[in-house]
Image (cartoon, rainbow, N blue to C red; front, side, top):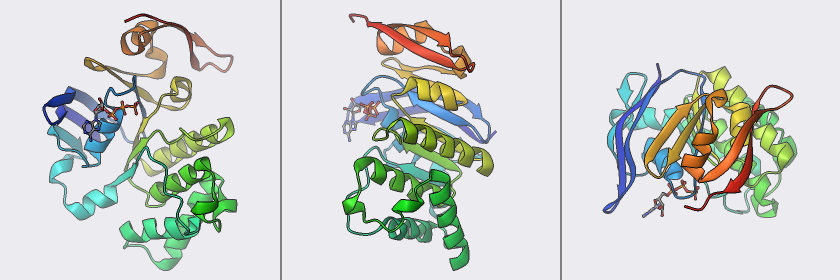
Length: 257
Ligand SMILES: Nc1ncnc2c1ncn2[C@@H]1O[C@H](COP(=O)(O)OP(=O)(O)OP(=O)(O)O)[C@@H](O)[C@H]1O
C-alpha cells in the first residue's frame, strides 16, 4: 500500500467541509478521479494532502503520516497543481519549468534537469511553447505549462485540481494520457479533481465521489451506477458502455432537490 486516509476532517472556521473520510490503501500507479458537485470539497481535499489547509485525522503515505514527514521529503514527494491557471508573466515556459524543477530537485545535475524538462515538454506535446512568454499564451497553454511545472519534479503524489478545465478535446485527452503514463511509469499516485465524468471514467483507475453528506463512494469506473449520479449530483442519468468498452455517462435530467 502507499496511500490511505483515516478519519479526515476539515473545517473552515466553524463550517465542516470534509467529514470523517476514510480511504483504503491505494496501490502505486493509481490514477484517482475526485468528482462531485460544486462546493463539495474536492479542492479542499487536495489542499489537505498538499498541507495547504489544516485538518484532523491521518493521511498515510508509505508507512508515514504526511503531517509528520520532514519538510524536504514532503516537498520532494508532493506535486500540487492549483485550480487557478499560472499567471500571465513575462517569463518563457522553459524558464518557469526550469525554476520549478531546480527549486525541488536539488539532487539533479544540470544535464539531468535539462533531460527532465525535455521529457516533460515531449510528454505533454508542448515543445513549441518552450520559448513563448506566458504573457503571450492562451489560458489553456498556460494550464499545460502549469502541469509541466508539476510533472518535471517527478513527484510521487500528484494532486491536480481540474488540470483540463481550460483545455479543448484534443488537449484533454493528451493531458490525461500524460498524467496516466507519468503515474504508471513513476509508480506514483495521482488524485485528479474533475467535473468531466467521462474523461474520469476513460482514464482513471478509481473514482472518488464526494457528495454533500461526505464520501459517497470509492469505485472502479465500471462500478459507477445511476444511483451515484442521483445521490451526488441530483441527476437522473444512465451509464452505458461505449463501443471501445469504456463506461460512459449520459445525463438525462436534473432532478429537483
Ligand atoms: N478559504 C476558504 N474559506 C472558507 N470557506 C472556503 C474556503 N475555501 C473553500 N471554502 C468553502 O468550502 C467548500 C468547499 O470548497 P471547495 O473549493 O473545496 O469545493 P469544490 O468541490 O472544489 O468546488 P468546485 O467544484 O466548485 O471547484 C465551499 O462551500 C467553499 O465555499
